Image (cartoon, rainbow, N blue to C red; front, side):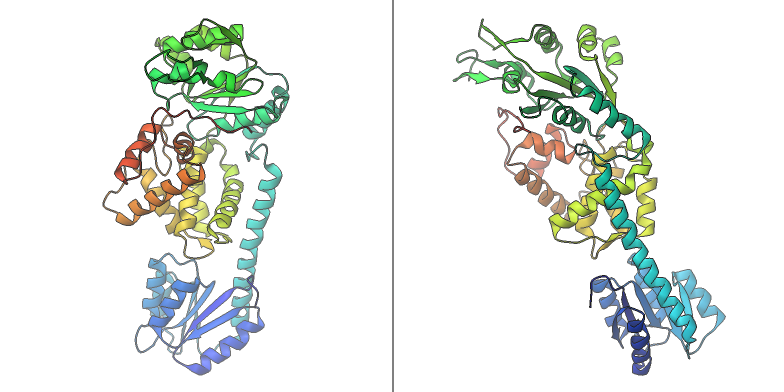
Length: 477
């Protein structure tokens, strides 16, 4: 018995019928399980998630229509066929209305029975082939950790290849969750600095009073609490790449100092009069229109001109929907391996739901939704209900493109009364923090949260708070 064989569940109180269908089903390549009790049949359907369920209309405990109704209410992906020796137009119509795919009368027409088995088997095989093809295409389309077959993403990949060997400063634009840090890493990996450090910092996740020290370092005694000399991010990234995410959040006073460093190539530690030469590629990212920020007096025009030597703009996921199947296939493979739950694909309705969703949180939201759906799924196929349950928390958030609307979102909206969801969220946050080695800034980025929103959730779930003075620096690429 191989894992590829489709599963057939037959529920009938006549053992002769069970024996007959078992013989035909196994001959047509099915794994067949049977039971004579309707309640047991429902339990088996929930536990095994069969590809095809054949159920008798009239049984002593639970009738066939009740089973059809229960399976459809549970969002089962199984094809359901009702069987009866007392056929009538009314019961056939009712069965179809409830979600049954077919209605067979006894004694069976063996050709029709065989044709039905062939159809279900071919559909199961087709779904597996499609997922395998999508995964294979996703692997071929992968570029520096990004996946995209759409024209917009192929243009981005081509631009990165041309710029990476030469660019010294670059500005990456895109909505929250589109993968701006991946672009910065791609520029680093595809260029001559790939053997040096890649250092990332979120400009909205560092305490403003400590930001100058984070960027440029400080000497002992420069301010209260400066008990030792500290190397800043520019010196840490010397020879490599410094990625400044959400550059629009940088305070105006620091914008002027950043401009001086970019023009002179020298940094000056807080409290020191001695400049230090650095050779750093600086890639900045923003989900805001910095031209609007300049007009509002929140961003320096001279810094914008200095940074905007090269501009890369990432398309929103809603503008590249043709990439969703390949992203989905890659994420399902990743989460299936991580959770030890091999995923064979999505039900048709689930795939349609993913394709139609607005995705205000873009790829980060898609990734989080699929991660949670994999955790929720009872079997190898993700159902529309799994997707809806995973989308629901983010659906409560604002759909504004400028805000993170991932599974965890930018604020605390959610169903607080749902204890199971709260427990699931707590477990997931703890898992991500553990995977990032306790680095709360990196964990916040992976979860799609600002640092402040992460702290609120840590407090809500009773998870130990981080040290606010910690320096958040990625390890070398």
